[in-house]
Length: 164
Image (cartoon, rainbow, N blue to C red):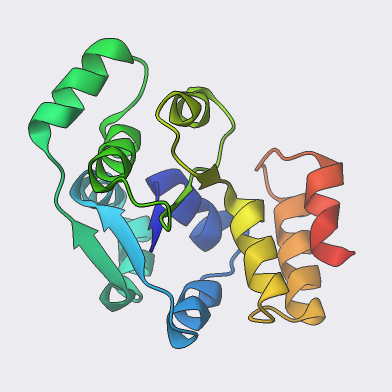
C-alpha cells in the first residue's frame, strides 16, 4: 500500500497537475491510502478537497490510533496531525510493503528514519510510476514542466530525473 501525506496530494493536484497518476496506479493493482488525519486536512481547502473527491474512491481512509498520535506529538511537537497519522499507521502496521510519501524532506521524513519507516517524496512516487511504465516520457515532460514552473521547490538534479 502507498500511503500519502496531504502535502504530496496537494502537490499532485496543484503543482504537478498529474492526478491521473493516482488512477493509473490503482488500475495497475496498487492500493492507495490516507490516514483519517490527512483526510481531515484535505477537507480544510475546498478546492483541494474537490480535486481529491474525484479520486477518493481510489483511496482507503485509514483509521489512526489517537493514543499513538498523542505520544508522537509529545516527542515531535513540530509535526502536524496528518504527518503524525501517516507515521502512526506505518508504525502500527509494521508492514515493510508500505510506502510513505511526504513532499518535503523536513522533519517528518527525518523522524521516519527513527521508526524505520520507508518513505519517499513526490518525485520518488512519480519515478516509481515511470519505472512501472505507468507514466510515459511525454507525461513525464509535462509534469516536469508543471513542477519547474510552480512555486514547488525541488532540486533540478532530482526533478531532472523525470526526463532522463
